[in-house]
Image 1 (cartoon, rainbow, N blue to C red):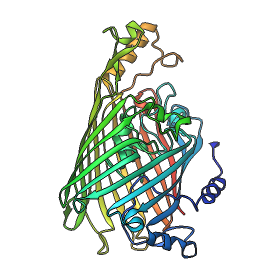
Image 2 (cartoon, helix red, strand yellow):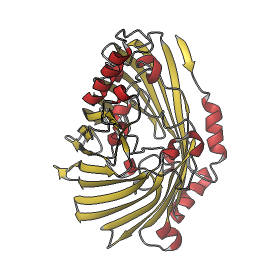
Image 3 (cartoon, one colour):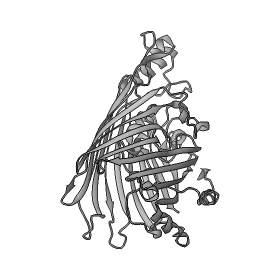
Image 4 (tube, rainbow, N blue to C red):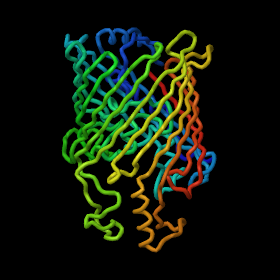
Length: 452
């Protein structure tokens, strides 16, 4: 097997540890309020310093995520290879109530760096069309250093109202979903994966604000405003703070219900987003004719919109602990058919935490997803090929016709230590990129997460 790219890990870890005294790590999820436990970190308590900082309101850590993937069978290019991509995240969370007496206030800073190569673009998918999802979710949005979080949150009305402002991404608060799987179709806010021209997921940040209000102990509503600025996606603009290049704003609104059934938690999210940034039609040209006929610019629309539904529900407990047991999940998104490549997406699966009494911290997951391409995109591709007189798929100038991609993944997570988790996984991708001519692919993966 040819190894396409493997970046040495030790150098990355040493780099992160060298700045540990200044900033630390947080994941893309907000850290939950829980007792501090130095055993959860590889470097421990730093001689008591970490515990002391926590008591004073500062949490400093560092995290490394690495993902390897190898094509075992099928795909566009059957030359078997393995590729590795990774992310270092460095950050700090400050409890401003402890530090300055500012009640229910917090500041968070995060810097990330991504590096490596992805298997999906040229091995699994046809490079002319790509793969709709990705076999390595930690890859993407520029392999570079970025300011990923810089925000302040403040609670009011005894915690019923929460306001957050600064630099962050929509997926931190809206359409949120865990990221235990390695395939991107089962990781994070799915709206961003299919409307990425206006919704920027981790690690990209933009100027934003979010207001959340608790309606009942189990129900809250929230609304946000996020700058739409494509220049933030550019590799050289990871720390850009000016608003130059802004095209508009994205406004998400969401209702969240967090019930407990038989003492077991659930989370149900329904939301809608609207962007006032201009968006190109996927079929019509600026002159009203199909774009392949005119050959000019696409027709411009004044907005883009979509909606989502997320369901997560734990069904069973094990060993008398609600932290163990079987859960089910479901995700669905709908998107603007005039402007969006993907018009809808659905995904479902199960997860099980603590499947064995001897390994109560391990977890298991299985999911399937369907990504459907807007039919107008296929129409545009067929007309482009017809006008060019090209019908042979093997012709380099042929425009692949995209329809539906199916993704599936099964993984088992070994909690090797409280600070190290290894998740070997097996992925199956049918019609990568939604291109029927591309053979279904089988990919073996390994996801590693380390907390320092």
